[in-house]
Image (tube, rainbow, N blue to C red):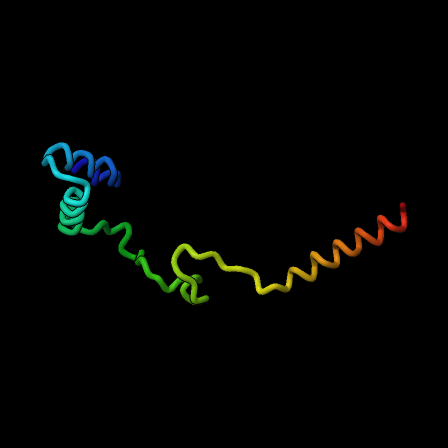
Length: 91
């Protein structure tokens, strides 16, 4: 319980596994059950985990990285062309 109160879930699972002699999945289930029964911390009452983030509004899956729309490739092309012109002038 002390590990859970500190928010150390990994340590809590280790303690449960050692005390009960169960596997990882069973220990996780026991820990989740205990967490569900604990009273909610009022300090975090206004926090809500939602998937309506910027990623979701862009149609991206969790963990997916947004890619550019391709407009920067022209900037790179002009920079390379400009460098080639300058090198040609001073060579």
